[in-house]
Length: 228
Image (tube, rainbow, N blue to C red; front, side, top):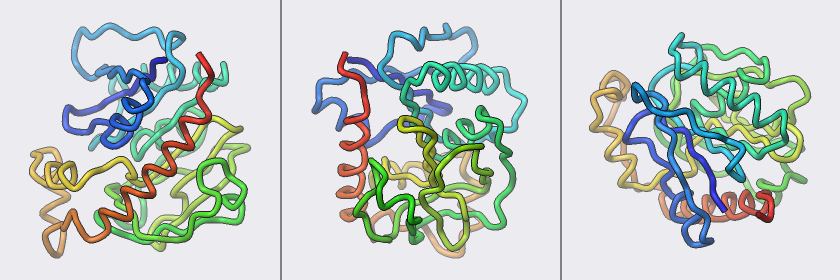
């Protein structure tokens, strides 16, 4: 079985998802459409799509952003599982006709995630209590038509949604490791965000809890994949 992940910068990979998929003998391929001349993948050959984060906007008029929006829409139309994370959630929402726009505040760091009543019977989030998770975003999205609202934070109302049973958008980062967070803070593309922080970003305060939550949620997500 193969899963395809759309990457937008070299340093934002799938993190814990990649290692979990490897444990299940599921191959993860990356599509780096931001690289000039890269061939557009045939998404029909993959069990699911993962759309990762990045410092750009879902509203940017970049050719590869438009490519991804088209491919995400195709996947949803054929009921192929799609998991969007941060920018990926915004791209999923936009591909479904929802608006993406500047959030009232930037959320960069550890903030509590709260779940809606709909999350209580959701395949990924049932039985999970509110807890701190890692965030790095300045934009948000409206819920797509027909989507179930699953999670929120004090600073951002729409933190997670599900459309149907297989299409999820997560504004927060469950996939990160402490090493990934430290690396993001050193990247030139993130320099503006880092300089706005009141104190250096600590990768460790809730890392062990996040690892447990990540394993639970992404193992459940793997259960949504077709038996190829």
